[in-house]
Image 1 (tube, rainbow, N blue to C red):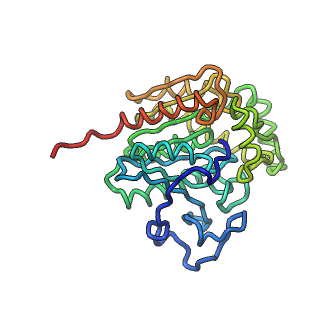
Image 2: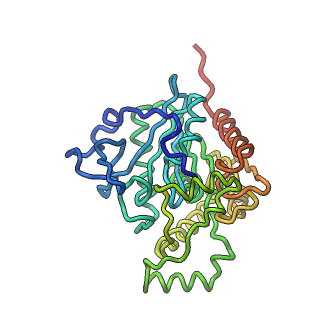
Image 3: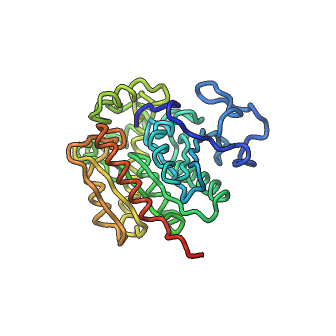
Length: 322
């Protein structure tokens, strides 16, 4: 998380050439929530006809792999420009989009009828880029709620991904905040007042780096409002789905989590590591770290990114001989 905005050097591919039929028939038929015509921005149109803002970061030379970045609740993909730029320096092609209801994409802010919509849209975007680079391995990098989306996306097409990197993923609801009584009340409220706001993300819980906290607070593309009861129910449903899937997971994954994370319970990462039947799995715990490890104190953030890059490079297929 954090508002890196547009200040980081990045390269956009020619979205018209790449997206072809996914572009709207009538240019200028839609605008972002900020008022920018989608005809001027890279985007895809999802199965519900909503425009999703996309970003693409190309390495200077031929890419060795594709990395799809999945952002968390309330944030947006441009917050990962610094991460993406680092990845491109290692011949990785990075792509992402703002989820429905987030950032510069259409849709009601931070509200979703079904969590599956996020997964469906991710698979659509991945399939689209795969057609351009059919022979390259694909990795997913997901943070927070994006970690939950990444897990369920990989579970739908396990053979399609070379590996999944999860930074403080949302796997298990925090037992203190999701007590049986609170869950019961939430279910009642979901029927009576689904739009009722039940709490906001405390920016200070994002990172120990005050600069990152300030960037997050001042980022106008971040949703700073309250989380609706109905959205909370979708997160609980996703968490429940993940717990059911864990014993069936066999794809390679890297888990990174801070011990002082107040937003996504670290016990979920330990649960995934212990229950998944993957033989290629790794967990790294960062003592005292908060939620957004990639935007933690500079030295730790650098260490986290290096861990991610090293793991991805180790999982690239070895080049065949001449």
